[in-house]
Image 1: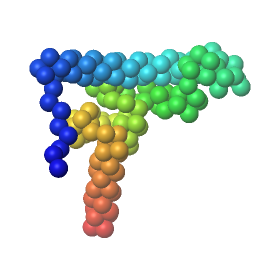
Image 2: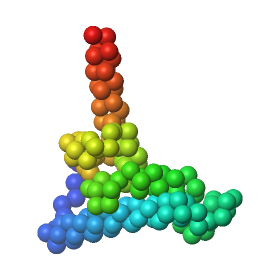
Image 3: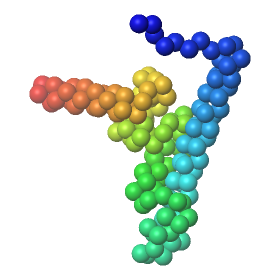
Length: 143
């Protein structure tokens, strides 16, 4: 049996690259925008501008997200400094990377190529790094 291989014309290949670049650009902009939403939610919460007991409804109405999703973006906004290269990653990758010490996150993400991995692969890399660190600490503790 022959494989179903579609050969794209040069014009279609160029259009495909253009579309892929636009997707990446907008995806990255969206992640940065959601971090800014997280920063604004932090400001609203920290400054007490939403009356007690109204937070969940206010978040749903004004941020168009659940309280749990808002909490994730708020945590990421608190943890990542503005301009961090991690801002371009999706929330699942950012959440996994939060398990790495704050001073090591950016270097770790660059080393594993987090921008090229799936969120599940990033999570697996983080778990492996933490297990390695825990084992090293255990060995040192035994000595």
